[in-house]
Image (cartoon, rainbow, N blue to C red; front, side, top):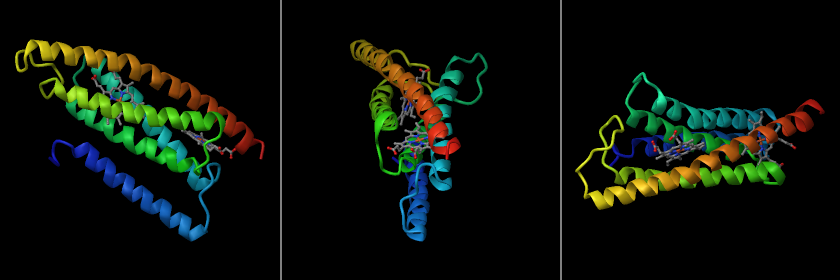
Length: 183
Ligand code: HEM
Ligand code: HEM
C-alpha cells in the first residue's frame, strides 16, 4: 500500500514539514506571512518553480526519444511536485484570494483535483513499468472505455494547465510591478 502510493506519502510528509515551518514563522512573528515579504514570497517562487517543472518535465520525458528513467518514476515525480508546489503557493497566498491571484489559486486547486481523477483513470489501464499499455490484460471493452476516459481527461486537464500558467504569469508581472518594484 505504502509502496504503491509512495509519491503521495512523500508529498504528504513534505507538506507537513513545510506546514510546521510555516507554523513556526507565524508563532515567531505573531502574524500571517505576507505574500510580498521574504518568507511568503519565497514560498510563492519555489512553489511556482515546482509547478512549472510539474507541467513540463513529464511531458518532455513522454515525448523524448531518449529513455531517461522509467515513465512510472517520472509520473511519481510529477505527482509529488504537483502536490508540494501548489501547497507552497497556497501558503504564499497569505489567505487572501482577491482578483486574478485568487483566480490563479482556484485554477491551481482545480488542476490538483483533476490530477487525482486522472491518476485514478490512469491506474485502471494496465501498463509496463515504462508506461506502455499492456494489451489483453483487461477485457477489450473495459480497456477501450478507460482509454476514451483518459483522452477526454487530457482534453480537459491540459487547457486548465495552460490557463493556469497564463494567469500565473500575469499575476507575477502585476504583483512584482505594484507590490515589489513600486514600493
Ligand atoms: C501559481 C502560482 C501563484 C499563485 C496561485 C499565487 C497566488 C497569490 C495570491 C492568492 C496572493 C494574494 C493576493 C491578495 O492579496 O488578494 C498573491 C500575492 C502575491 N504574489 Fe503570488 N501567487 C503565485 C505565484 C507568485 C510568484 C511566482 C510570485 C513572484 C514572482 C508572486 C508574487 C506575489 C506578490 C508580490 C504578492 C503580493 C501582492 C500584494 O501584496 O499586493 N506570486 N499571490
Ligand atoms: C501543478 C499541478 C499539476 C500540473 C500543472 C499538471 C500538469 C499536467 C500535464 C500538462 C499533463 C499532460 C502530460 C502529457 O500527456 O504530456 C499531466 C498529466 C497527468 N497528471 Fe498532472 N499536473 C499537476 C498535478 C497532478 C497531480 C497532483 C496528479 C495526481 C494526483 C497528476 C496526475 C497526472 C496524471 C495521472 C497524468 C496523465 C499521465 C499520462 O497520461 O501519461 N497531476 N499533468
